[in-house]
Length: 260
Image 1 (cartoon, one colour):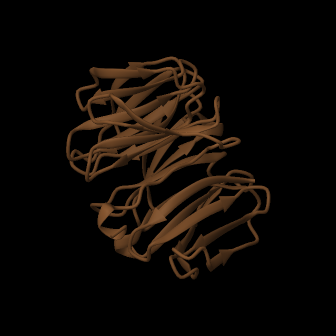
Image 2 (cartoon, rainbow, N blue to C red):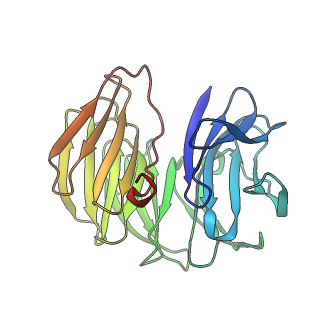
Image 3 (tube, rainbow, N blue to C red):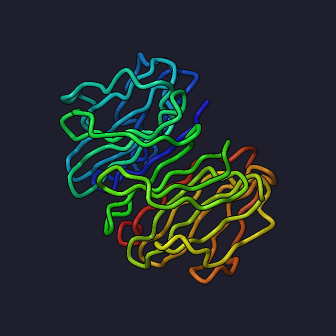
């Protein structure tokens, strides 16, 4: 039951959480297994910090977030807990602090890299979180309440943007654009840092996850409703659609410099 995927730019590894196997695995460019982290219950969301050589893993069944090096060794703090059903996580690249969607408690929590709690904001059943590395705001989606919330580095809610049912979120920090997969509305929405809607791309049935190619400003999105993955230009033009997938969930993008 692979549910989440993340890209480690430092090692050029792809990390996959296999929720129903209770494990997280890293694969190299040749698809060889590099690291296996086993013994978890239901690992879901992943957050990689290549600069600090670490990965944070949400285990929704154990109400904990686990912390490892990218070589698979336990890192201090070994975990953040208790966290009631953690399903989304992001790292602030500036200081290595961690934002966690605590779905079961209807809030988003912020932790210092040391594991010290640093505040929380009430958000109904938060789905995903992403950090703007320039403004250092955290952007949070809530599918249940149909909104996106911007939270300041001081852990204070700043804006609330009403959508239909947002899940995936990704931030283009170079261009100040926030991409949101609005699954219930079958569309991808591009927001500005101010919260204003820049444009919408419709016709994407049950679109779930999004990622950004920082080099080009393009957005890639998974569309489980029709078994496709789409590439959207920075102006909202549909550039490409790859079909033939059964139920695509997650999608990261490798830097173009690593593909040469």
